[in-house]
Length: 95
Image (tube, rainbow, N blue to C red; front, side):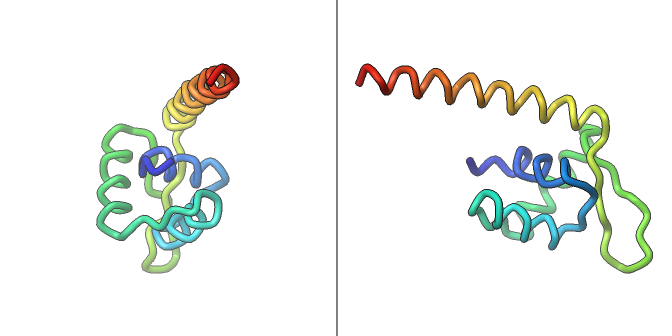
């Protein structure tokens, strides 16, 4: 799984994080290292979609948090992935 949007939303489901913390978290749970251009491009798109929002910070790093719409979108995407995985596993039994 390498979709930056889904990886970022999944990372933020655990709590607010700034970009570098998201990169580290994603690499840990998914084994995927997002480059800064990919990460920040996706952050911009997710913010424009209303799925994440910036939160106040006392230092120079900008943390982001999942919005209610972002949570709903993530739940829908994960459910679709689960259906796809179940179908693939069922079909593999016949291969």
